[in-house]
View 1: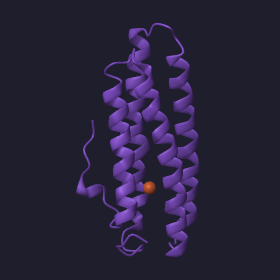
View 2 (view 1 turned 120 degrees about the vertical axis):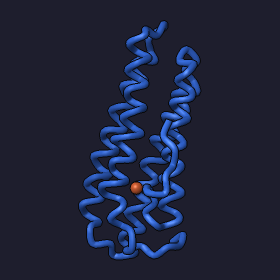
View 3 (view 1 turned 45 degrees about the horizontal axis):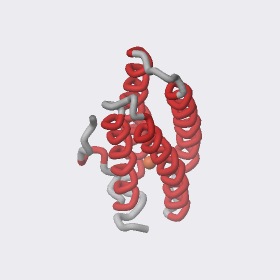
View 4 (view 1 turned 135 degrees about the vertical axis):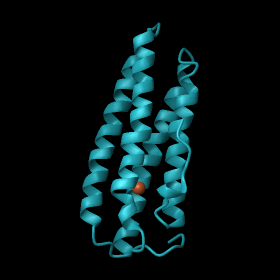
Length: 142
Ligand SMILES: [Fe+2]
């Protein structure tokens, strides 16, 4: 479970709020995974993450366009690959969950995915790419 840290802040209220929501949703998947035989909550939060994730990328790109952010194209490329990765992970977790009985290795694979989503998918992208937005986007909600 990864907690929000002020060093993740891009200095824009709406973008930060959406990043927090993504992190919270990944943490919710992890909590749901503590009872993996109860598949519905895991898949529910996974779908939520997908929806919030895609919506967030679109919102961020719109915001960047509005503020004429100079690294807009780089960021959009990053978003495309993040969306592909998220889709692939979601498909794989759905495939694992189709097993009637989950094996130890299935469960640990899903935990690995959640760790990857938190650390590499979200936080690494935030620190490497989104933090460059700081100072370009104003501070408000728009
Ligand atoms: Fe972002």
